[in-house]
Image 1 (cartoon, rainbow, N blue to C red):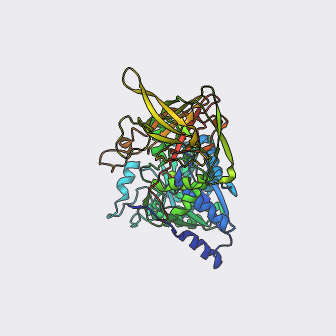
Image 2: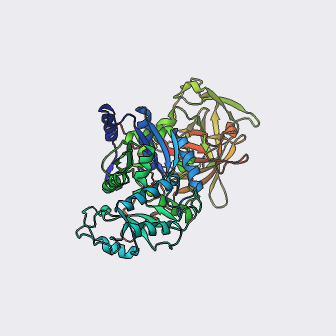
Image 3: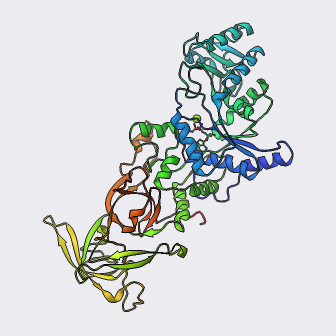
Length: 555
Ligand code: ATP
Ligand code: MG
């Protein structure tokens, strides 16, 4: 696979097909669907599919449905149904219909009976292992099952017995009778029904036979009147079977399948199975852990629907697989928040500074713009007193050359406030720096027009007297940037430093911050108020993205 850093102006070949079909009257109205299986939470890859399907319908006056492809009771759950609906809505889409494949079970059964009657399906008693042996390989044709020539009557009787619960799981299957020597292995008498004595989240214990994806999906599309059934490339080889099912079951409406490349992101696992593993093995704290590429994780991290939609648009719809740089997603959230997020100051690793010549007990309220790039957002007031916090990382006792932050004898600017000069370093018994003693110059107040001298460093700070304690959660990619070696799995490449938790301070006006509020902390980056751990007494911020970026799609 190739890494695509920049896919700007990607064409949408599916849109071109739809437009052509509309123009030449092949379809009257485009009808698409997003068909998740409710066996996990949606991830950013699904978002791409959602955007493609829903935006196409919206733009071309069509319809887009949300359909739960719930044909496998063993893996599906109501919890997932709820989360999927929530995520699609959050992304900003409204479905024109909400459907469950399981509501078509009766119809699917009837069509299977029709196939049997036409001599196009048969009940087979081969075990799964035998069936694999009979299937052949890419270079060798398969062999006919010894059950292939059962009479229609026998097949009808056996299929009914399967339905009535007279057989155990795995004892029998219903197979389409197509061609065991087809070069396309999918057409070598694929299984279309299997037995599973399991309770289904929607149909309960009504059924103990369930249709296979390859049989169910085309029927679902046909029943709903889908015109363009958009799926990912791995289904390309299934298209002939898709068409066979629609034709042989004599469905009135004939949908067509189109495939596009699935989204892959660098340093990101993108399969529900693997994401579920991360949750179950407690590598993360749930599907909505801010390190997860799930939509609920991205939401908790602080990503906005606008940023995700813009990202999906930028990557476009391609016909070949690629890996997109995760930095591209970061670019879009920075762009979206640049004008929206209030600026503020927060100290992640506090170091106390006492301004020894500042009057004790005095409080000054300094005015600062909420967002200099968006003056309409107005101003905020920041207190300044004798004691403040700065970052530990902004002080060095013995600095290298070109270090412009605090060190003994050096003067810096405090953003929105004064110049301060470091005079004394206070240490504990172990020699750790615990406090700095500085003096300030009242002449240098920010906005006073002072031009006497210049300093090279500008630091952020928080007034210690009014500071609000806050927890900061900093994130790195969950997966290390390494090539997977043979015999290892993605679990061997979990980044041990994917989360760092710090206890710091924020400006007092942050007391009013609510879960999901987003801010730009001066010199740090964009942060989101965590909805899970923030309480009335404790503010928790998730790092969405740092300020720096090496990625620019316009380059
Ligand atoms: P996963 O492999 O993550 O379990 P899936 O394809 O099994 O995904 P479904 O619930 O079957 O998950 O997917 C619903 C729709 O989302 C399908 O049409 C599928 O093609 C699409 N989809 C899934 N993953 C991606 C992806 N990474 N990029 C684009 N579309 C995707
Ligand atoms: Mg699937």
